[in-house]
Image 1 (spheres, each protein chain N blue to C red):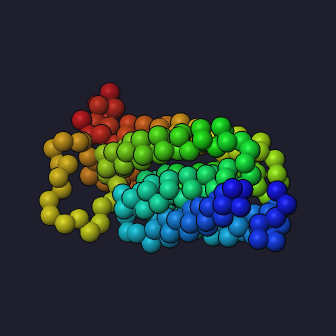
Image 2 (image 1 turned 30 degrees about the horizontal axis):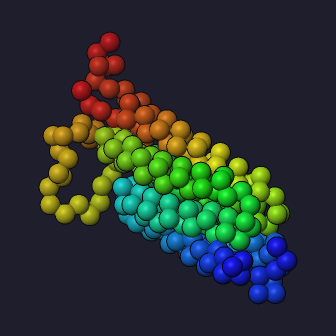
Length: 96
Length: 130
């Protein structure tokens, strides 16, 4: 992993990490200001997808592939969290 | 061979980041929860998957973990979105720009007020009787 078109790979990955802060900030904005609980939960789902991408790019920036395992763990936790949150919304939801 | 993989990986990462940004813009700007989910789920899944694939292509290590992550993302994010959308509809989340009648009326139960606007603490009718 010497370089990509003469650019150092960790430096390139760090720049891409900064760019990835844009979707993170947008999703966090919706999560903080979202008018309803459903909006916040959707934004949480989105935040985790961005976090998986963050973990993958960090693996490239540090050269340690252990961060890919972090991404896998985040993806798994995301599913459990979404199921729990959906069950919460639904149990508070149905009218008899 | 390695140079080709590098170029493909970098391209995948860039396209994935663009998709993630588009998904985030959709989450902020679309008018109600179900439409926001429409933006976040499709574009968000594709973006995260492309970034993981690109990183695996460039670094050339952790291929098994990266493949497993992509598989988990592709399998679980649509299922989670379906669960969340059903729950959002049933909990009475506000729907905007609905053209024509509500096609789910009579199929799924739906509360008349969203959770944050209810004053009974979100208890169901059977709870109140008890």
